[in-house]
Image 1 (cartoon, helix red, strand yellow):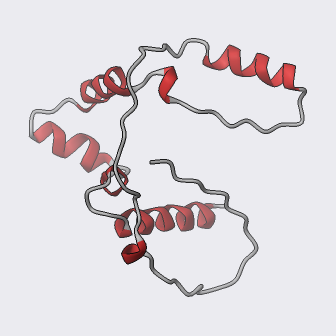
Image 2 (cartoon, helix red, strand yellow):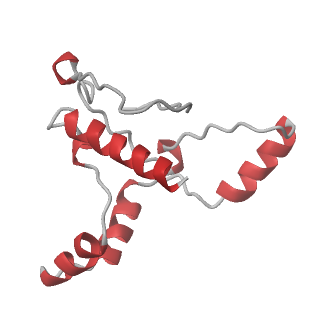
Length: 127
């Protein structure tokens, strides 16, 4: 399982690196203790406050989509979703539109597998 997580993380990093430099997906990344705590603190940045500000500025129910798949009835799934997500506020924030796609034909790469394993990955990137 851990190898699968590492492989998926590496694949995401590669995809991010290969997309257009000016697209927001190219800039998105994950962090570690140094990048999220040590370096910001040295620059006088409070990571927690910045994260809360980002949340306040960008998170709104009208910006979100949820895909749900389960064996439960539609009524039960709806009840679960309403219970878990009812506190997400809708600020009416307008959608951010990005011109172009994260990857153009010039960014397409071909990768040869190092080993073969059976795995299904469903991935859809949204601009």
